[in-house]
Image (cartoon, rainbow, N blue to C red; front, side):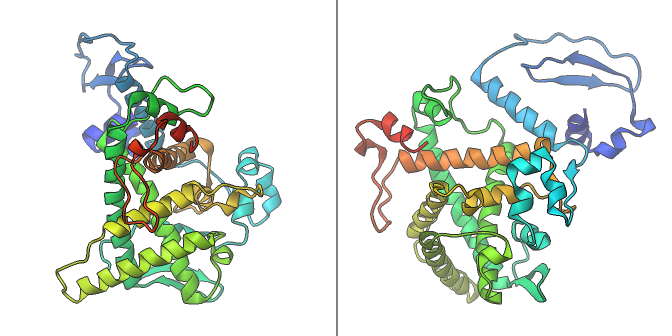
Length: 368
């Protein structure tokens, strides 16, 4: 009901509980496996209406729509339930959820407010510096030029994901089923684009926040001359750092040219492919020492678990939509890496298109 009131009547969750907002309503349909809807009137004149079609359809379309409905219901719950972040780590470790995910250990002694600010999308006012907060006597700031380059990176990421979507649309169903599998047999439901455009956009926003976070923390590290690990716990490999520097240097020049009024921009095809290669580096960074926080993706999954205003940790129910979005984009990246529709010919060592692999199913299974 909260979701309906917000979407159709622009009534917030808090107003839904006010006395004047309570009216009789007739529930036309309330089933687990079909779209849920209702008619709300201010009197008792609601009339029953027929429901067309089968109420328990098991089509793939309804399966995906149902999953998206469940995620949206979670997001529209009134406020995020949280677990207090105390100064005493031992208290947090007594919580089974936090003990399992180890976030209190990961972020112990770290400036949570700086971490959250670094993971935010950039403002449209890129002519202004972004204040990240105070830490160890430093005024942590992301300069306006840094914010403009981050905008360029996010614009490039949109091109990257458009290419990934084309590959997904041209991938046979059986391979897309394998992509969602974690056992020797594949799931009966294939990996698909979300049914709703807002859901798809929300998924990409989560990954855009990841890009903002890693580039801002790296830039901050250089500005205040402190390692990224000391600032937020973020650890980057030598190869990841080299690729980030390459992308940053290229787009920094493009941003400066735009500031100077240069209308003719250089081709960014190589940067797009390099950015995708960087994403692959993060998603294929295997852990060999058991330290989960060493992986940048795993580390950021913990950042997503921090409430943006209360600066404490989310409970599992509230955290699920964030991690599902991150994993969806991760699968899309792995598919593009394993079986790209087109050749990546701007890389130092070109990546062949999928037709170069005799057994595409085996190729995909090797990377999932």
